[in-house]
Length: 173
Image (tube, rainbow, N blue to C red; front, side, top):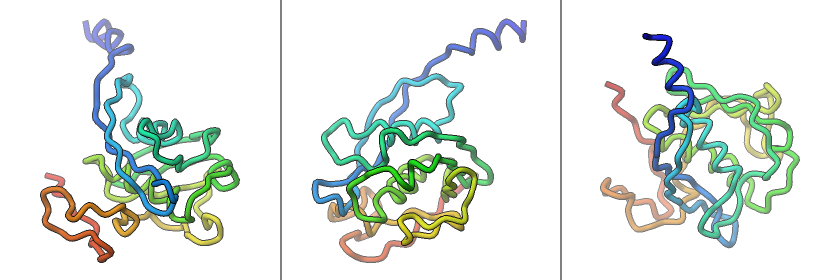
């Protein structure tokens, strides 16, 4: 009966709410967008987030990743999400400040309970600097300096108007 149960899970779908970050009109700040997605349970939430970022905003915010970016692999180890994209990520046209595509990925993925840091690779290599500005050599923590500042982060009381915010620590118990 285990075999039959495993077959029935092949096409199981679930509804999830994701918080994704896209670019504002000036393309110099990240704005959060919450969306409900129905997805196959065999697709990891981490991969789903990357797919949704590539698909683009549903509320008119500016794109953060080239539409034709290919996801080569997405995996999770010790709360670090490893995202391997093809070279379109580096070379594709996205009109946005240099940090927007990188931190759209990092901030969106770290909204998941499972992810604290994100390691972005291009064609398997981390020896890359995005637009020759942002090193992808080590896993990145979320940055809230790039957020379009509501006065306070919801429920935390931490100011996020142009002040440095320490990356939040999650209790993984």
